[in-house]
Length: 324
Image (cartoon, rainbow, N blue to C red):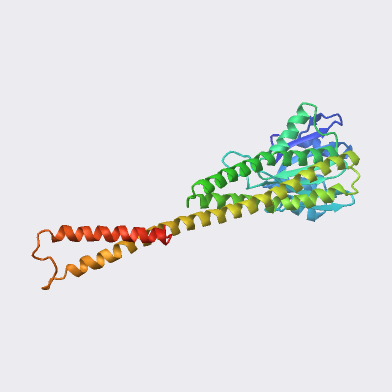
């Protein structure tokens, strides 16, 4: 489309294909009660004006939600349609997957209106399917296809997080290092961020699955049930990742503490061994008369032999006491 606020507009032909629409054709196509999908740029001011002009029947709450700066996943049903706000992983270049991309939808029997602020691969995939003649045939197909596409792209991300946690756990068990603390914190943060947006989507799909909307038939609801099962599993996996990360962190703290205690123990043993030696050398180092062996040339070596015997006696005693 030449207009930057209209990213994509088409008429669904009912056989998996579509016919692209120019802005001048949108009103006529809507009036003919054809099934239309309009994909808009949410940040563009013309998008709101188009909604108010071409879809005057939409409640102002719906228009506000579609154009809002910040959104959370939710569903709001009306007699004539439903407002859906969903999120997918951010797969745009240079972006973090946990910075999830929102898509706002108004869906009724004939009209599908979607708005986004950043590119979402699931929407682009639907465009490609329509171009190939294998896309959604109606509103119900569109919603179930979009939801399935959103969650299919999440699985590799969660698998990657799980594998990363496995690697950190193995490293912590073999050789604990303070540098792994940051990695564990990053994994827990990712799990928390993902769950923050995925858990509400579980409720959205659950509500949609039992909805009485006329554009949802039993086949659509079965597909929604499959997506619901998948998102429930994702939420459970994220909870498991968080719990495992906490356990790995505890293991890391324990490992580092054991290492520190071992080092302190060895220092203590060394200090205990040299304590009497230091006392004896200090005692003989005072510059007063009466020091034994002061006039004997062999006194130094005799004294060194006594110190060696003391060290051996201490080592024997410590071993017997099982100090090391």
